Length: 354
Ligand SMILES: O=C(O)CCC(=O)C(=O)O
Image 1 (tube, rainbow, N blue to C red):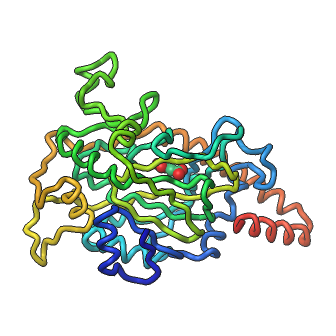
Image 2 (cartoon, rainbow, N blue to C red):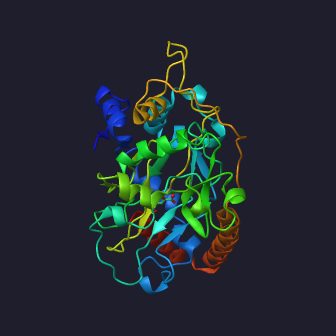
């Protein structure tokens, strides 16, 4: 695994990205920034970090909504520089989709003991990100998969797993489907469904030969898996078609990440002149390499569309609940004696850092 410690994408990092489709930027933001960003997290959740009996019994992971955002350029400037290199320059990045929020994905682990993961291929959550748009090979909406890490993550501690050799099969599949594919949605998640499946196979889209199950594809095509263990402040930048999966947090030390998409102003292009004015980005080059071609004339045959996933309504509800909890906590703090309030804020900070 290449770990970038300085402010440039060295030739060996480029080679690593071209081979494996990801880079780890070490210590891209500080523990203090992480503590500040997460300081209200447990209040928002309504959970006690020190009392597992308050943690949910019906799910291992919580996807929180965001209250605030900060541009990548100021929150993690080294990451911003590398993002620009991966995507072919700042001009190509959509400024409206280049900020990170406090929409934490908290993995508290399964309430009942589970065996440690021995076979990553058997994880039950393999997917490719982007539940909010119809996918084409050149889709601009999710130009990188990005994981900023807000807690230390030890082996077995609920790290995200990735399958670098899964990029090529996903790219081949999307190249063969210029009509576009829908991201799976409950009850049929973790899949791609051709946009015309519902009309052709109304009973069950899985009958469509074009149906794509991410877990099945990973089990069929992938042999190399990486457990993204990390330190607080690390950021993993990945090719947008990287299959990845959550894993059980058997340690039950709270694992906190986010996964903010970064978008392009215009779709990726796989048939450029490739001169100084029109260079392929590293992500485009990696896609072409995955397909085993130097260039590809790709054009969608249906309109690009945004989707509104069910998670949006669920997170709006969570946001209202979190705001209520924050207001209640503030009201409690106001009636506390000043000395107690000071102790409480120190404790909250220590918890956020832990
Ligand atoms: O929680 C994780 O490790 C993975 C999260 C993820 O892949 C997702 O939310 O799309």
